[in-house]
Image (tube, rainbow, N blue to C red; front, side, top):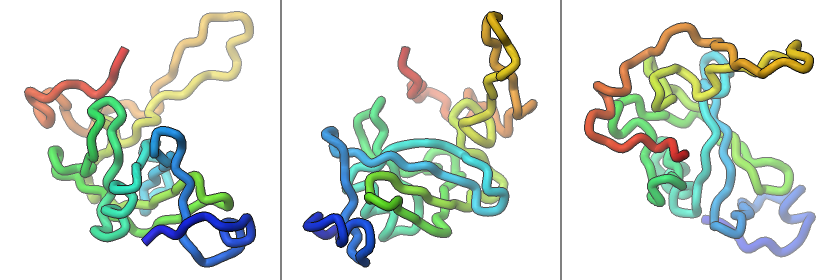
Length: 153
């Protein structure tokens, strides 16, 4: 499915899919909501997750905290159904647009993993994050009961 990278012309101007995975075998992925265009999450895919995503038309990622392939939505039921996949100019970053129905993508319970913003008007003050999403779409304690939190300190 993936071609060997041979030339800059092939990578930048050709039709071959030849992704460049980093030294850990990962490629960054930004995921957006197909209906709204909102950024839902940023994650990573390894070669297997990328291939599964293309083959199944459902998002699969590589979880660095779990060190495993992760089929997004398998536990919550809000599977990310892929509407399109794009790869950037040098094929080292991926953008997928997904449909999650009425679900959410953030394990904390919000629609988007980017539910807070950093105010830019805080000159010489302590930065306090501001919530852009006021309510969670689900209770993670119910949905992920008994599973370890993927956030690592």
